[in-house]
Image 1 (cartoon, one colour):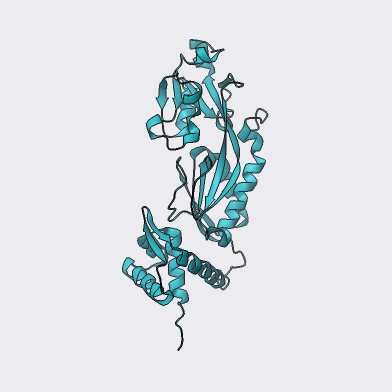
Image 2 (spheres, rainbow, N blue to C red):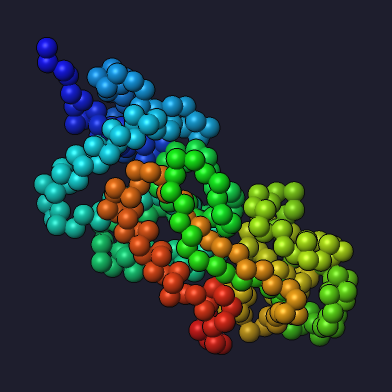
Length: 304
């Protein structure tokens, strides 16, 4: 008796669903409707004798059988790509990643820009968000988060650290005086994240260090923190690599008010099989390593 084998077409559909996380998004990429995607996945599952996808909060997640099938599918996709015109460069296609606002602007963006000079067929979707690593990462190839992630069926890699400190604008200090002790600092308003919406435990440092300090202006976006501090809304607890770019900001009590936090990268088990994802991962690692003085707040003036 001959055992049926999955068709390359079905495997490529599964590969796209694993990357997009949803049938509709995968269908848009492949030029197929939702029904056709569902039919091909059902046929693949019948051939393999088990489920390759499971429902998740954000869409579809691979089962262990699906992960094995996607590993084969990636090899099929690579073989097909090598037949395309101008296919000498395997680093092509789309990579989707999520990262915090500051990391996205000052690490990921220049890293991707440099990478695309070498690989113009690469496209990167960069979604900015500050949250814990997802347990179900449908449709995301790379996540960059603050703090060590607690994840299952994923690879977590520590990228490096960065430093935060208390900053105020020179105009603000001229009007309100420069605090010289933690007790004096507590009398000023804090510019920072919205406490009730903060999803990352490691980012609660200012409220632990100065519990008496009242919120002045809060936001979910770190660029708002920087600009609000520059505008004199209060004293901001800011990443040094963002604040040190602005000569109108002064760092306060650096020996007392500082936090060193880690950036971690989380990858789906199948992600590194994709040359484009592997190239982006390597580019991020290199950029973090070369940016260490900036991230740690030890770069000389003008080097941020």
